[in-house]
Length: 104
Image (cartoon, rainbow, N blue to C red):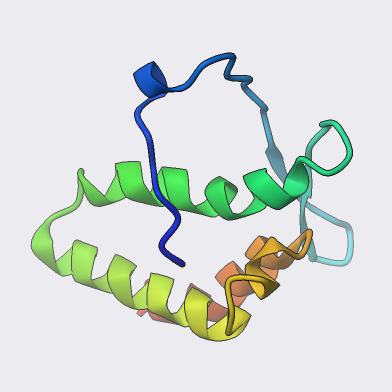
């Protein structure tokens, strides 16, 4: 993923927790359901994909970690620039572009 810094929760003041639900529509398209203040999506969109992947990478064996890295590289290729990664809904499309690599 683009190199945003990650701080431990202890370093953050006045943090807020958001819950996002990944949903599939009747036509098979993935989307996220999230309620937040307008403008906050520019901060949370990149993190929405990065945080679970960071936690997951620590639990994987070496081969699976390599596949995860290749998947993340494909997501970066999809976005092309950090600015593109902040588009609402782009994380779902980026993941879909990397799904064949993940399923290998």
